[in-house]
Image (tube, rainbow, N blue to C red; front, side, top):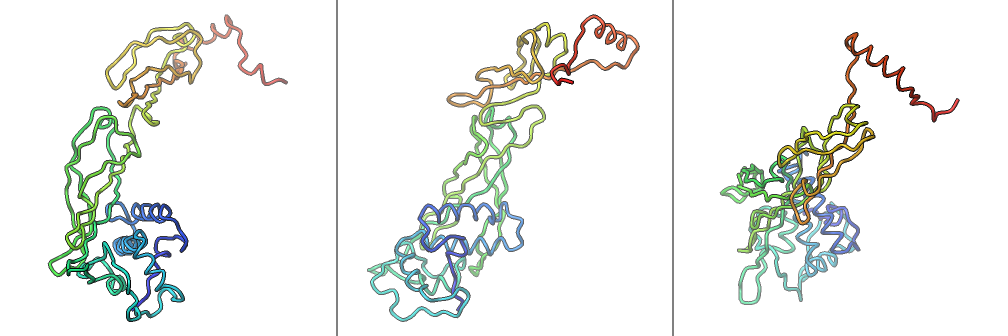
Length: 309
């Protein structure tokens, strides 16, 4: 039987802290989970990552594994010595009949019982996936059906990919990068243990009008040169409907007008920033070209005066 280096699988040092192990697991889960991964061996890699985390996150199992691993090379032939587990009570160990774990894992932790003969129980692992939503879903809230792939087992207990559809409520005010927790929708538990949870990471689809930063929204607002220079009241679209905004006189290109509380809902709500974009009329007619000539004569202006000679 091949020895498995669980630390190498997670990409951490043997002295890694619990936080290091947890962060490594979450990073690899996002990379290899069948819902999001395009890797050819994602299913097997995900099983290895889950197995490694199942051992290293548990202080008792990790201590036993470290004791066994001393002086053993990864990939080499391995058999646990008789009586290696003396003095350990493996809370949360596998019941030995879950095909999602390797022969190596089962030889170490499978089939053990608590005093009194009860099978060991283990909570299923949490899983992570990413979903893309429209900005409008975050602004107003929504309910969406999403299809996910997960690892299940056939009638012989062999692992297989399965499709499932979940009805997900997206609350108004959700932010990009935020996680929605779906209790009990992660990996199934072992030995009668409860299922893990599924965490959905929110990502926004690109929007034709708005750019998102946290809860704030940014939108380009075109204005004519005379509106920017003389000041004007212009109508601007917002997520809550059109509003009239005042463009101050002598506004430059790129100036931001803040509309408080008109971004993504929250406590506090985000703001909407209108970024002024001064748009000049094209000189595509003789009348327009003459207007520009008149402007050049009547308003002497050198935009390069600060460049020097």
